[in-house]
Length: 126
Image 1 (cartoon, rainbow, N blue to C red):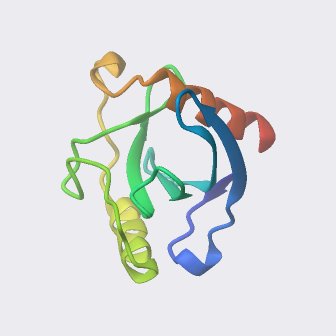
Image 2 (image 1 turned 90 degrees about the vertical axis):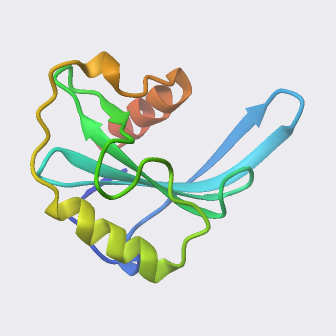
């Protein structure tokens, strides 16, 4: 489920997800995407094989796909081991970013697993 313009961790609604990873087994996690009007979103995950409570910044590309970006003043990587208050602060910062100018969508992370998960959440929120 994609949520719009949420800026406090307490308001984020998570979707429970189970995934099977070869050589690891079944993992369980909670996942949410918070979309902002400026063309950015936050992917927030908590669970097994994550950085505890983690947040990644995503950007909407011209081909209408969300892709991870590591090129914002907020972070150059996934932010992990966060406290709830830190997630809220990052959501405020993401919402305040200026609209990105995307000239090359392939420049951003195109991890197929991430794209499949985002597509699944998008379909569920329709």
